[in-house]
Length: 278
Image 1 (cartoon, rainbow, N blue to C red):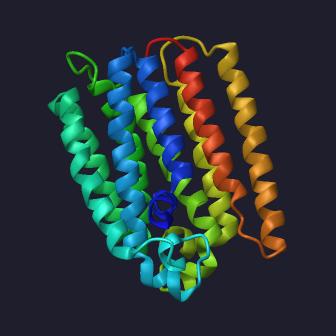
Image 2: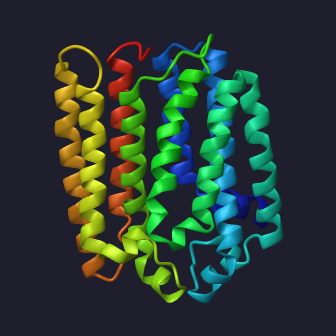
């Protein structure tokens, strides 16, 4: 029974579940029926599984070198071969399931997947490491809207908000692993600017995403839009502070990344309560 559990853990279930849930909520807010929202969720889940498993397949040697106890391949809970095969199956499934929502939607989600896989290798080793996150997360809401009947054009503001959210997620996601990454030769943009500036970049970009969602749509901002801005400030401040405390104790500063997930869900709820996206 170790292999199925190890496969699940190797898929990066926490961010994968958050992104999938956000896509389903966005699909409902955009006007999809239950079947359409379910297909959107299934397609996005396939991308998340593909990216997570491929990441652990590629990083297996590096994770063993630094004795990552949270990585199933490094601990022997699942084989590298099993993770690689699972990642390949999920990657192939993405455009196949996406085609049930139309060619424009399938093209968008496949482009997002390719971008994310390019982050896993080779872009996370370069100063361009933030670009796949910005592109893939910006393409995600575009996919959800293109999956509607007649494939309407996604509003620019929602694509921009997704890109800002993804860029912020990149800085927050890398923060806990900066030390291990330095030992194994990973030198992406967060590694180059350091933890303090990475925390600032994550908070600034995520706050920018919330502002874009509040002020981007036509009309005056709603009271719950203003409330979302206040909530984002509180969550990001708490995450930043908790991350600093964890770093000072020598623990992995995962609080900032969890704050990202909370702000992302706040933003999606903000979209739904704001009415139809298109």
